[in-house]
Amino acid sequence: MKKSRFILAIIFSVVLLVFLAWFIYAGTHQPPILKGNSKDGKWSVIYSPEKDIDLARQDLWAVHITWKRDSEFSIKEVVFKENGVVEASGDATDEPKNAKEVAVAIMGDPPNTNNDYTVEVTWEENGKTQKDIILVNKEIKRSFVIPNVIKRILSLG
Image 1 (cartoon, rainbow, N blue to C red):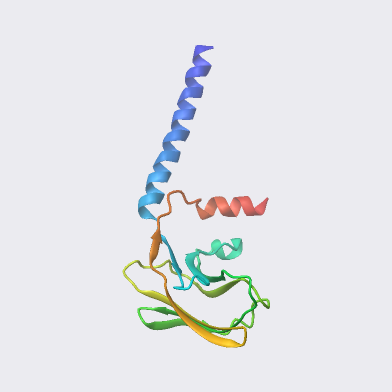
Image 2: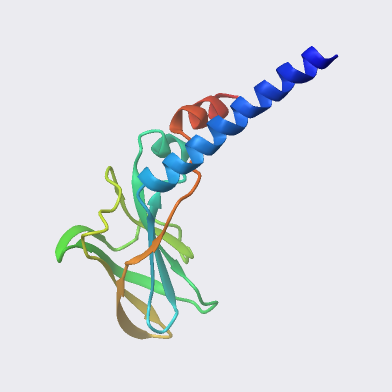
């Protein structure tokens, strides 16, 4: 009886130690997610690992903008810039009509916190064309990140 409890305690301790080690590693070695909001609160932007499992397997990161209002709108143009250089642009015509969330760019690299990222969005709301420049600079640390190996295993099932 004591021997089985001892073995169980060792197994539990090893699992806990591995979990703690991964938590510390992930918290110190994972690039942060970057966020930003428009000044009027109509748009939010997130630069994060791609959620689509097929793209996540490839370690791709994506920039998504989200419309935060209930009113009708249509996107005319979206431009994603890194250090003032255009990395991606488009008119969002490949997205569903009136989509609240739109993919701006899907890239292979996580954000570099030393770089400046901006999203310029031009849209039409109530017949009026408007433009916002959104700084994507609020860092959100990621403490526990599931390794892509585990994501692949889980997606096969």
